[in-house]
Amino acid sequence: MPNKGQTKDEDTASEFEKLQEEILKATPQTKRIQVGAKPQVERIERSIYLFSLKNPIRLKCITVVEWKAFEFFILATILATCVSLALHKPYPNGDTNDLNLFLEKIEVIFMVIFTGECVIKIVAYGFYQHEEAYLRNTWNFIDFSIVMIGFMDILLSSLSIEGFDVKALRAFRVLRPLRLVSGVPSLQVVLNAILMAIFPLFHIALLVLFVIIIYSIIGLQMFQGLMHKACFDNITGVLIDDDPRLCGGNYQCETGVCREYIPGPNFGITNFDNFILSMLTVFQCITLEGWTDVLYWIHDSMGSTWQWAYFVSMVI
Image (cartoon, rainbow, N blue to C red; front, side, top):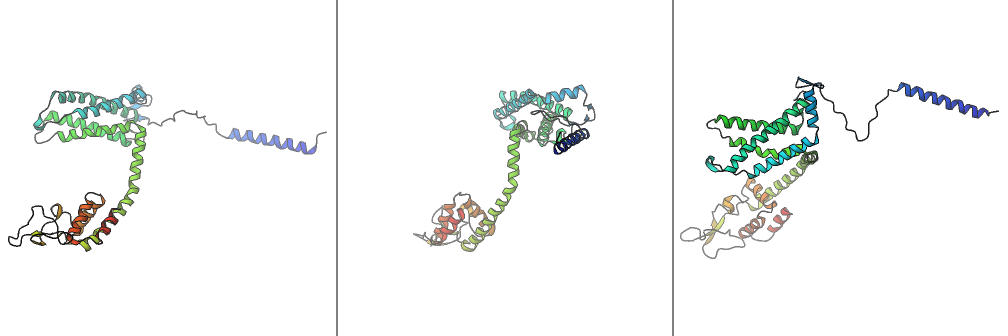
């Protein structure tokens, strides 16, 4: 005879199996997602209010846009545009050469290709009506803007409006290499990471500005009005040297007298006479652009005792 405990366990197991079957029946069946399969993109029912999802033209455009060969073709065209921009040689007074004329003809081909790309993507994705539309993507918006500027260039060149320089619009062609970023997703990730890192760097910029302000105030208090003395002739009252050297400290005049007034080094820009010029001088020093010259000018006009500590601590 079976044991009472064993019968109880069998009853519990059968009840558990029945409960599992009821749960499976009540749970809605979901489709299994294949590993490595691309997620389905939700597309709007109608593109630019004309093309439905079943429209053969839109289906063809979607196929072309998602075709890898089309992406490589656009990237090759962008690279060719960069080469064209590098080979173009500007001449004054509207002059040109055979190479520039050839590049202008090639420019028409580039415009046709980029315009065709915009049209295909607008038909496939829509223009601006929903979240997945063409212009909702920042890089697509840049591409569209560059194409529109190209059309304005062609239109205004054909109209020959007097007093309007079309070359100003042609300068926007240098933005075309940015299309490489829109064509390579890895570059988009890198650039977005750099842009996200810029905002935290503002805190560091504020700290640097705070240090510049502190050193500008210290320099203003210690070196104000010192960088204007030079050697003058006692009799004529003119400068002894055409390129005067500051005096009154380490440097003393061999002939003549050390007195004011000269504008100062760098046409009077490098000094500590007011807060703005003091900030400019401190900024020059922290960029290591001629900071030793400023130090030697202070030594010549004031002496060399503790002044080096101010400049060395600022640079460090």
